Image (tube, rainbow, N blue to C red; front, side):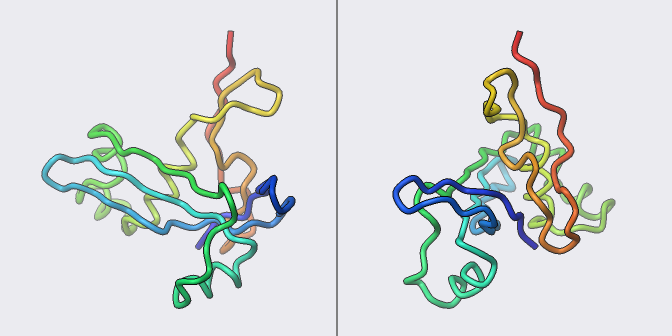
Length: 136
């Protein structure tokens, strides 16, 4: 699974179908916190190749990191949550990203998820449902 979302790599151009996937998750079970990192690649095929070829790197600037607070850990990664929802922690990384409202919108009137408008590569459906926060 991954997200398909436009990425503007200013130095080399626009990538309307950049493929973003979880590349790192560091979760500290004792402190109940951590971080999750997504990288964006030119497309899904390039992302897949990067798993076995270390010379393939993400697009310039195509990195999004989420710091996981104890509250977010409890909501997304606690063992009881994973068991109840019958999901794995990687799926929950996507849920965390979809519901985190932390990026200024292009019109600069609200904050929204970084992945607003992204498409779930498995389903073809819009992946992000978090409501933007209007700046007053």
